[in-house]
Length: 170
Image: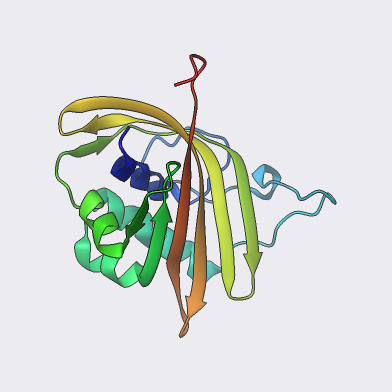
């Protein structure tokens, strides 16, 4: 998968625990599916406003809603791919508004959620399958998205996606 396709992983920001998502809008994870830290503490629940923005972000990416993506993605947004490639807001939005992109349902596992008063780091391991420009792809990625509460609204400010090698080392 090329560097820009790593941007697809941010599509999966709403963490839904280890489950298949039959629809593009997953339900929130039950508390039992949330990962505990080293001391066994569960992360704080997602603030309702953040959960709404995560679902709006999901919907905007799936539908290619440029206006909604412009609103939710911070102007200083950076996505870093596993090869170190950096993608900004405009390129990230262009990827999701590309009519040639088609993703299959995904499974999230190894879910990580860290929430604080004005920010959150949300991540997981995900198996991506789909087509881009009519070419099939399949890739396992580990990703993390960082959200910030700015001027009373939540925005995604950073993403990191790392490719997980397959059994053949590719």
